[in-house]
Image (tube, rainbow, N blue to C red; front, top):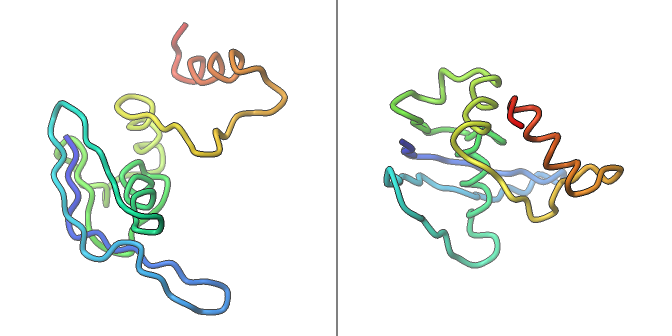
Length: 115
């Protein structure tokens, strides 16, 4: 379902300092089961997940989702993919502060046309 080929991602600070977050990473995730990413802080775990979820763009390489290259994806394709196949629990939660937890969950379900 999900394969990553030769992903590269470099971040550049405002002062022009470059940091390689991913350098030619390739992995084929199994169709079922769990995958654990471990490593020290700054090793690229969150970057890899953000790229796989379409929340960020790689500098080069390819993500293949359900046999289709993400190079051909439009933003709405990633939205559909996130709503159907994967989910994110953000470190900072990203909740709407004026809503209760229940209201935040209800809004997410409503956006997916679910009760």
